[in-house]
Length: 293
Image (cartoon, rainbow, N blue to C red):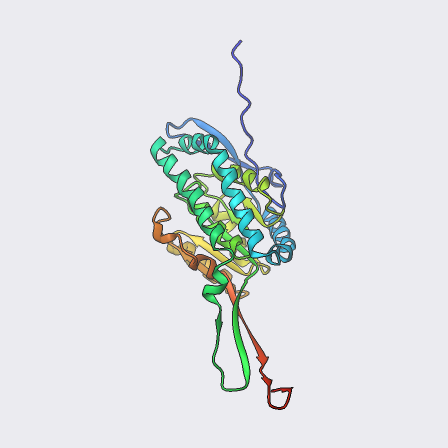
């Protein structure tokens, strides 16, 4: 008797767990020949709300970690991804990549994580400043994480687009809810398994699969989301996101870029999701021994 393979069940990732969508719905992903490949969860608005709660609860702990520790954790993600090359190669090929392109996407993804791991304890020095003021004060401006960021990942890239948008978010101390590519979702769920075994605290990253048309509005309109990153160039989608995001004046970033380009590997993607905090400190009056105000 021919043995039947035990096929992987692709779930979503919320608060460090792998639940099935609460809606019980799924969609079928076919290979390039039209044969059924896998079933993928169709996440609901309730799944998104659960992910937002998890990300918000995780924000304080993650943002208060040292930059060195965040760097170590990101490097660990790269290590784990490297150790599971064969699995990711197989999934990329099953989604229609050639072996050469799959290897290129995987290597660029690993290298990009290492790149941002190196920036975790450096971007503050680059983007902070000491400002000249007329009064007897020191005036400092320093970047601080915005908070909770929702990400609508690249539709054209299964892994690299996800990594290129997600990693700068968490490198800067933010937490994230990410919607994976609708047409190329396999690597997103497997990448969540990498995150789960890479010392990333639960809730820092939450990954959903499903339809953009159903989830774009809650991703952009939720009042506890501080910023949204959208990958793509569809005018109607961009218009919808900007309109919904205006309800609580959240920041909107539209990335219509080629993530395979080295130019898209930049600390500006970290800085985009930072707010600048300015602090005034009185300069001591040496002559009188008192602080000047």
